[in-house]
Image (cartoon, rainbow, N blue to C red; front, side, top):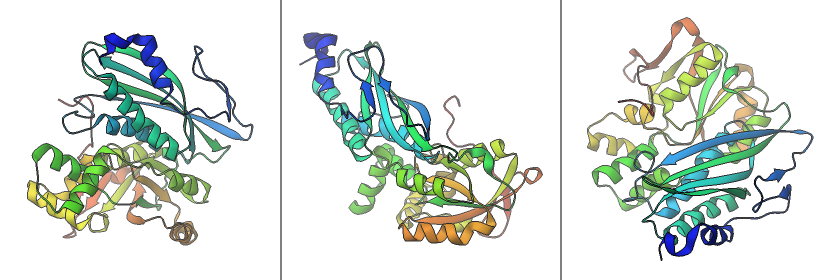
Length: 335
């Protein structure tokens, strides 16, 4: 079945059945020109949006439509998590090439529904148009954070310790396998490819970090460690020193980087799409915060220290030498 056989109205009716409707907080949802939502008085409302374009953010020759929908919402949820918040309501807009099958669009929405259910996100509307070019998916997402508890990029100060959750370079390894047909053990292959295609936003981790005194700056690692460190340092008017030997990288990912003929540091700094949380912590609060993270079962690693702005951004290599972090991370407009 193709889109012309169904028409816009029929497609919207079909997709409405794929979307999650929760009465909590929704005054008016799908069917009106805009969704009307309640916001609790003791919360701040967060609002983010991210767009994914076929051929730039995903490729359909190695991504299922389910994966595209899943990832499109995941990256938005990660932005809310990076503020210490909880996602709540989203609207989905898609521009669909005319040759797309209705079944494929339904699969995309099934991916959206899967991750929306995990994080109790209500999908309350959006827009659907025909595209003369690639498939485009855009999501605008609301979230909530306790008033006064949002964590910004601008809070880092010299002396803070820099941490990351989880492992780095994993999604870049998945992209390498997909794009270069690399070879590795099946278990590792499944793990790194899934990290690239279906990232898991760190919502509970972000909420916990936002509740802990001493967490000074917070960001999600979407564009690579170099880019995210640069964002925090720019916003906070500081510099940073990262310890290469401390970077948490799976042994199999290191082997893949060697197989690819590149240093794993490049994947960590420039690969992006790990969607782990990067945060800085006041030195006098390290012990209680680390204990809280351990108790919650959250993996984390201290990877560096915040320094005064004139010292710039640098990495201490495994051999003890220091290099300026010239790597920029992912740049949408790079040639």
